[in-house]
Amino acid sequence: MAAVTTVTATPPGIRPLKRRFSPGRAAAWTVLGLIVLITLLPFYWILRTALSTNAGLGADPTNPLPVDLTTSGFERALGLQSAEEAVAQGGAGGGLDFWRYLLNSVIVSTLVTGCQIFFSAMAAYAFSRLRWRGRDKVFGLFLAGLMVPTLFTLLPNFVLIKQLGLVDTLLGIALPSLFMTPFAVFFLRQFFMNIPQEVEEAALLDGASKVRIFFRVVLPMASTPILTLSVLTYITSWNDYFWPLMVSYSDSSRVLTVALAIFRAQTPATGVDWSGLTAATLIAALPMLVLFACFARRIVSSIGFTGIK
Amino acid sequence: MSIASSSPPTRRGDGRLAAVFLAPALLGFLVFLLWPTLRGVYLSFTRFNLLTPAEWVGLDNYERMIHDPIFWDSLKVTVEYVVINIGIQTVAALAIAVLLQRLTRSALLRGIVLTPYLMSNVVAGLVWLWILDTQLGIGNEIISALGADRIPFLADETWAIPTIALINVWRHVGYTALLLFAGLQAIPNDMYEAARVDGASEWRMFWRITMPLLRPVLAVVLIMTVIGSFQVFDTVAVTTAGGPANATNVLQFYIYGSAFGRFQFGYASAMSVALLVVLSAITVLQYRLTRAGRTDLG
Image (cartoon, rainbow over all chains, first blue to last red; front, side, top):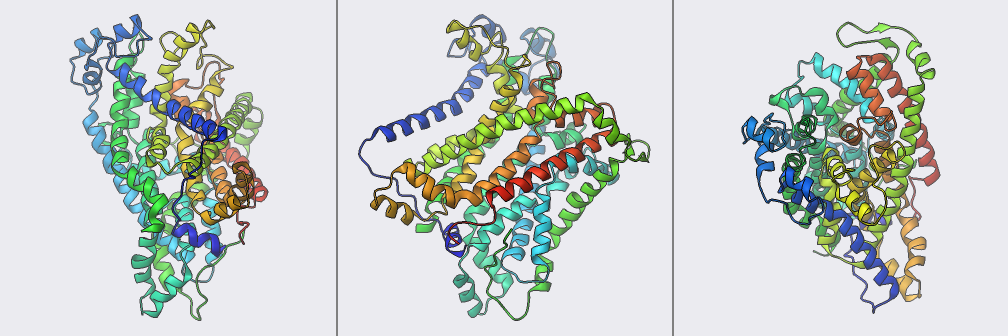
């Protein structure tokens, strides 16, 4: 196992095959092109819809460009329109404070990601590089935790959060995922185990403590998987709907996903307010796109190239 | 499972330090995972409406569950969903991961593939609800332009589950591919170089190098995605709300309705226990079948 794992910690650069044209490669590129189209076209269509009027959407459903270019959908989603104005344009007229939900989502996701990754990394270190009695048994217990379906803990956790008086608070939303997930521990342990033994031995010979090795050797060497995991955790937390739906009951703790579902539920009698709804989905999705634009390039390229630096 | 240790053998253990490092995660594990799990099992033997204390009723909830046709129907619907969802998603994710590994080092492409995963299930559900709308959705406009009948994807009993399964493939396939891709990074490039020198085709390299070495990662990813897939809720909640005629009344949705709609927390817990048992069985089976703990590099 050591042989593979060493490589995981310092992945080799992927050298693309410099080959002449072949039908196989052309077919492979075509498939990849199709995947890109299926991936991206829905986003364009949502943007196009959000910039159209509801009347225009009904009159010209196939126009590839926005129909009657307008920002009224966004204004409605952000609660900037008066109720009468919104209703006249096919909206529901119930203003939602998306700035507040945005802040709530940021607070919860940041808290969860920071704490969860750090605590999980500590546990993963204990499970991979420290020697102690019962280690494999405790790790087996954590592994078993992977098998517990989320809803199974949500319901009793809701009862607990209620008993703690944390219903309808941001802390109540964050608390259950603040300390670890079995997946994060498992994932990081895999990478920690793959760090070459020689590196650790060299540090030990230099007189470094195990704590120092964790901070100065293990964490830096696993920075790529940690960064990847952090962004994924942030996204997961940001996108979580079910748990906040249970815990949050008012504006003070409402996060974007829940607000979006409420916006959808406010469908007016005249038909779905597609323009406003797609604008709202873009508003909810945009921060993750921005986050991704900032970090993804580094993550995505570092996955392939860290080994060379 | 084999738990391989890569630490050097030492005389004294690191017991005390390990306790410190483990403390926060263990606290979270005990309070927010183990305890609620036990409590969930306990609640399944009670009648509990959240307002008055839980009342022990023995096996009543389970008896009711066995005779509840809606429960069995929702289990069937859920399995149908999982088979379609996981089947397509795993093959597609593997294909994407391998294509990215073998074709290009483009970070942009990898980023693009991941994009749908940045959306919540709620957003993905709404996006496709709009695209597949029977009257105005572009999907149906295209179908109509091709001369076929419009398909009420999410309003039809036959189409609804495959549609929801595909919506969730769209959102999750990039993430799954990323996990597999990370696993592919662990395979030494030398092995491909050597195989190529020996004249091996890409197809042969895939089956002889990629698949055997990826298997541990693939096994973990499969276990995770199947568990996640069984818990489908968000997409159903925003697109069909269990309809039409219970055609998309997946187990999680039925459980949620029982708890928060009808305040039958005991019955909801019993169904959750049933789901837990099913998932545990599947996980153990998958783990055995794929020999998740081992790699062929030995």
